[in-house]
Amino acid sequence: MLANELGRRGVSTILFDEKSSTAFNPQANATQARTMEHFRRLGFADEIRALGMPEEFPTDIAYFTRYARHELARFRLPSAKEAREKILTMTGSWSAAELPHRVSQKFVERVLRKHAEALSTVSVNYGWRISRFEDVCDAVTMTASQVGSESTRSVTAKYLVGGDGAKSFIRRTLGIRYQGDGGAVRDFFGGKMFALYLRCPQFYDVVPFAPAWMNVAFNPERRAFMAAVDGKGEFAFHTQLKEGEKEEDISDAQALEMFQSVVGYPLDAEILSRGTWTAGYALVAEKFQAGRIFLGGDAGHLFTPAGGLGYNTAVDDAVNLGWKLASVAKGIATPFLLDTYELERRPVAVRNTGFAKTFAESIGNYLPKTHLEADTDLGSELRREAGVYLEAHGRSEFNIPGVTFGARYDHSPVILSEEKEQGPDLPDVYVPNAAPGGRAPHVWLSPQTSLFDRFGFEWTLLRLRPPSSTGDELVAAARKAGMDLTVVDIEQDQLLALYREPLVLIRPDQVIAWRGNDGDDASQIIATVLGHVASSLRPMCPAKASDQ
Figure 1 (cartoon, rainbow, N blue to C red):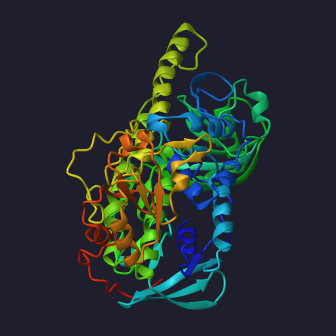
Figure 2: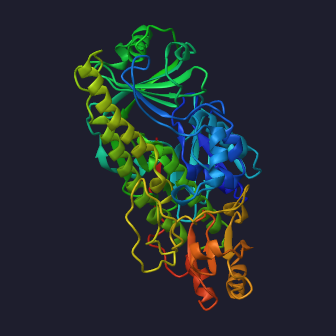
Figure 3: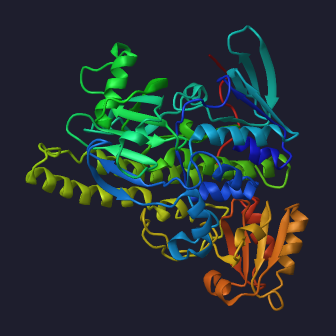
């Protein structure tokens, strides 16, 4: 994602990834609406929405004792086809250019790679890893080593970004530690998880319930969750290992028995891959920057994947850092702008890992009762009781417009914030708010045209009373600073009532930087949003040389 952001801005970028290619395993499976809006901004949201499951496949979250036994609850969500239709009429909390999409990361990565490789200034190199780096004050020097050979390459760049995962070599070498919850223990979603990527078309023949995207098994013997990958028979199955169970001791036959016990039927399946991961983390790196070196994604924050927040938080990291790196590399902004990456994104990482932890606790600490599966009056009552709880939980975890759209940068020094108290930050509540520091509120201008479609790829000046509030001084100051500014004129009472001021300056990441009128100091506004009014919070060197 970062390579796409930089390459689209003409910045020379080289990407090294020690994997041989994009992901084979499904990994993350939920693309939130804000991420889809970013994909729309880059021009490939429709391409992403066409991937994964068939367009009419329901994306429900369904809860069962076992998949072929008793359905307990179901939180209904639209299919890809329905999402394209519904979004055009939705208002309030879900007024957006895009709705979420349920698609495996393995499919998304292929699209991101294809578009990154098509950019002339981007070099994508799989099968290579950074083995040494040094911040030398005006640049970063690196050695890249080819996996499985003795070949090396030397690279000098203005900046280095470590998006190299939870065990990040970049982060560990810099001595930056994670902070937060290092591994909560729960009945579920708190311990070593055993993952199977498997093919089982028979599943839809033996399960007597409507298909769902997320299938959660809730019983005293073995709990699990399983995401549909293609809607035809491929699944990402995850169960927590019990005390005494070790991955290395589990044969493929035993792994299939684990899957069959959760289905409640002895069906056949093919294991495509298997592995383990640890649930219970809510960790954020103590710093996101050391001189010319930055952290993003899992290297900066590690989630238990409740609500699908890890992948989507990482995309927002890339969007935030991408336009800032490009602005500084081109000499439009000062290096101080880069310090605001950590100032803006780290609090969001703390916020989002906290929300994910709450979701994990809600499902992981809720225990199945004895006799839940019994075909008795007591069993029926226990299933009804569990269903009420689980339906409410599903709604709280997956109907999260507040998490999706509500992150704010009010205290950022490159935001001209207003001294107004914002409302409570709740996961399930989002009230569109045009105060500087948050995502620009969305409206549909026509049945197929989003307000966001009118924004420029870089900066946008939204003029809501163009005849009387021209913003000419702001436009002139932006041009003088070298800012790429698109001026959008829309005279619409609804928009003026929503944005409250006739002039609104919107950043490349669609965050409002300032709103006001012609009477404000245009030069000071532009200087502030580009980081020209403050000195750097940190010296740009040195980070120590390092070897792996």
